Image (cartoon, rainbow, N blue to C red; front, top):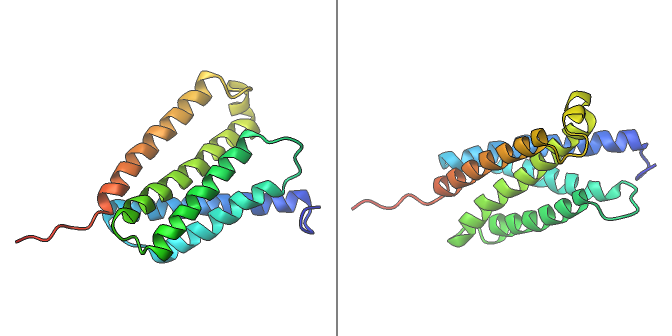
Length: 165
């Protein structure tokens, strides 16, 4: 039992929070690319992603593993995103911090998602049982390239439009 839930229920809750956070993060990042502010989506992203990352530490564990480190890094990034948005109002350099943070936190969750898919889906597990094989590395590399592209677009799209004279 974890927080009064069976491990299966807790895992389902953690997974749903993660997936909703990923979808909301992609929507927010897409809004940044187009220069559209999506405050409700951003709030959904922040709440679900913080809860998903925090809930990852609720699973029983004996030693610190890679997913814990990713979770800690993600929580630090999310704290910066919250400061950039709610305290600094995305003013000046905080606009870029916000865009980079949203994309980075979403990337970290997708990174973990890919690792979980390769661990839990039999056909993917057979291709990369230790997650050091080329199919896993290629997939993670492709995800990284796509998120770098998304991050560049989010930073460019979130810049204020210069005034024309």
